[in-house]
Amino acid sequence: MHFPETQARKSLYYRYEVYPYFHSQEDTVADADTVTVVGAGPIGMANALLLAKQGVNVILLSSEQQLSEGSRALVYTKRSMEILQAAGAAERIMSKALPWTHGNSIYKGQVAFRMASPTNEHDQFAPLNNLQQNWLESFLLDTIKEQDNIEVRWGNKVVAHEQDNDSVTLTVHTPEGEYKHVSNWVVAADGGRSPIRESMKLWMEGASYEGRFVIADIRIKLDYPTERLAFFSPDWNPGNTILMHREPDDIWRFDYQLDPNISPEEALKPENLHKAVNDQLKMIGQDHLDWEMDWSTVYSARALTLDNYVHNRIMFVGDAAHLLPIFGVRGANTGFQDAQDLSWKLAAVVKGWAPEKLLESYTFDRVGAAREIIAEAGKSTRFMAPPTDGFRLLRNAVLSLSLEHEFVRPLYHWRTSRPHAYTHSPLNSRNDDNALMNELTENGALIPNVKFADGSFLYDSISGKFSAVVLTKNGQVPAGLIAEMNALKQQRIPAQVIALAIDGQAVIDADVTFTINPEIAKERFFADAGAIYLVRPGHHINGRWLSYRENAITETLDQFTQGAEGVAA
Image 1: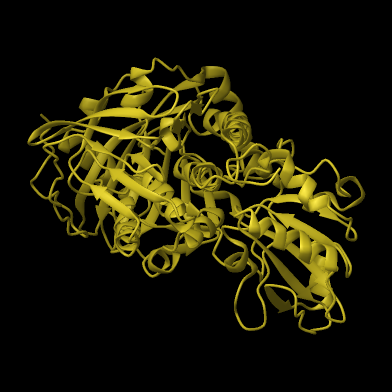
Image 2: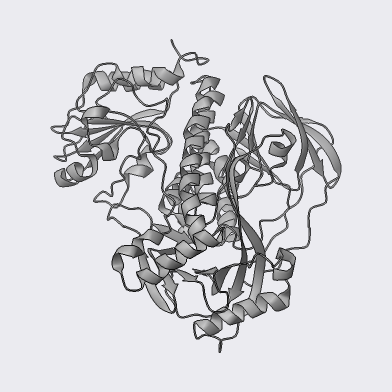
């Protein structure tokens, strides 16, 4: 039997609710078109919503009966918000989140480097947005409650599983005992200590770092803007680092590096937590202010990934698939990108318009992304938490030089998480004009977003579908393109034609027409009238052409839809 905590968690700013647990006296069997998601953290919830938006039924299992405790994943990138917009939750999230663009790196009382995240008038969201994970999960749950095709089972802990070629049988423990749940498809979003991953004896590759950080959320009124503050080698914690982030509800997060000789248990003693917070407040001249402790934990930096995210009918996402350092806000933000990529591919298989082989591209695309992140995150982690005396000496030299020499300062830019470009994806067109067009919009990159005159955004219209985005004049779209896209719709493939009219003339045969300024078209797409971009359901470019080429889009999709049940050959 499984007995999750039923006493509502305490918080200075968030009111926890304990949800009734689910139990079945008999074994349950999910319908063939249903996916079971194990884990109701941010990534599991987002995956459930994205699948539901694709018309897939979802059973979401949570081992707990309430949402997670503390700030945890705190900073969400523009890309994550674009994905959460596609999931239907972004408006709620941004009603509470604190957007920001800058970060200061401080050494010996001076700002040694000021980071500025670039912004653009066509951005739908700020580059970075702070919101405690419990609030984020609350808004995701509110959105889930609006979906008729998502069932949440609280207090359901998966303790074992078996799978054959066609299904997975989960053994689920609840406060009333055990039952079996059979599902054709299982998404493991069960966190960094994934029981499913561990029971399968799957090992991650990469590196663990010696640096450990205490995370402490405190309530205090500080008159600072919403920016990241990084203090290197402060007097009270020499040789180490402390980060400060503003959160909603007058909560501030302190992340401070532990001396290697101090155990996590010792660090989390109330007297030691209070001393560290007071020392930091004294250093910034704010020790006269009252504050309260809300939540604390210890975090270890790791950069690890599975080499395969798909194991027959079980797929891994988020921390269950990889463990990434917090520096550069890579953890949850990478997980949301996993969820988006997996959701449309798994939906394609479940709904029968693509074969199971398509799921191999999820591993190819997302493991490639994780490995790229690990390579970058290692640089950030070695700077933020030097693993050896040599790395610490090098960092201190950079810090000292940066106080007087501007050219040194970018050396310790924290390399914020950015969307991965699927440049080498097996799904990219092999019959297009990619090599002849601007590399900034190459195959695998995100299609540039565009804000139109009415305030709407391109991403809102292309999420969840294969979109042929065409630059048009005189209301013309090639008849062959319209016929191709209609044929794809007949095969149950979610497809549409989006016309971007440079001259403002509506395109009757297009699914949607937007007016776009010629200068913006040139600036964002590097192309003239007649150019076509084929975009995946997850906003990444699948193929591009300077002008229409008969059957090129069909041939591109044939690369990964042939052999699907119910799809014409």
